[in-house]
Amino acid sequence: MNQVNDEQVSLDNIEVPDKIPAKFVNSRVIVFNPLYASYLYVKKGFFGSPLGINKPRLEYFSKPSELSLIEAYYLLEKDEITIFDQKENKLLEPSEFNDIATSIHHKFEEKYIIYKDLREKGYIPRPGLKFGADFVVYKKGPGLEHSLFMVHVLPHDSEITAIDMVRAGRLATSVRKKFVIANPLTRSYYFFEWFKP
Image (cartoon, rainbow, N blue to C red; front, side):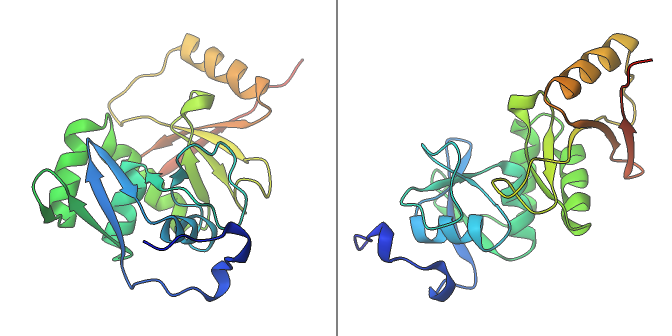
């Protein structure tokens, strides 16, 4: 791979393949080519997280990027990427990758339904683990605005307790975000706002 000078790369006029290559390695999906990783993040709607960069700028970054399993499946279904399984030495079909992701990612199918629904509604869901949620959701994107709300995906057969509600409310209030519970069965969203009496 050619050495690329960060200052001379413009993502506006680079050539990318129809399907960007990614690799499945140790339960992770990595886009090793920094140019393609940057393109997915900056030009395609904030897909992936560059390795070793906490807050990437909206420009070329010289690092590989990791796609969450949910992002990877979404892009694979959309024919935007290929995923090569290093261990099995083959390209994965969407159904094969879905089976793998479902086996290693808790609530994968439920989360994916909500992720895809939010994307199709024009939102940008990003992993929300550091906020204690499944997703944080943007309209424009991280670095361009603060996230609009946090989403917790609740499987249809789950129960939520009063303590869960209070915990979620305190967390959402502390980071100044709305808290949303999403039901994947009906693709319904329940917004909670707390206020002082």
